[in-house]
Length: 77
Image (cartoon, rainbow, N blue to C red; front, side, top):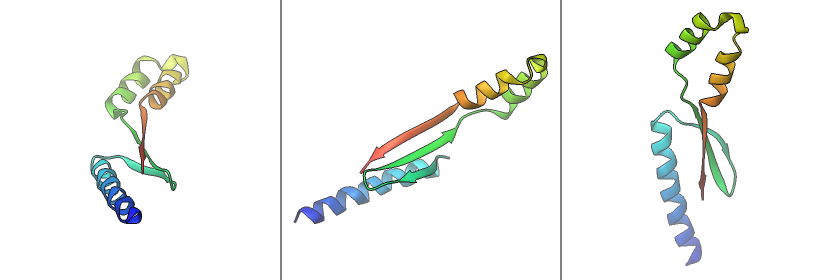
């Protein structure tokens, strides 16, 4: 009986993961304990503006912005 309830909760978690995948999240890792989802919310327009206005800083602000906008989400099974 426990395996049946475990299967139901796993199916519910997979439904949640599919919702995130439909909203531009990427499945980065799947383990027996969790799903790890990732996405980058950086805007191309902001990258261009940073490159235009801060080019003399060797594009460091662009790199910082890229890594600052990375998001991860862990969904437990």
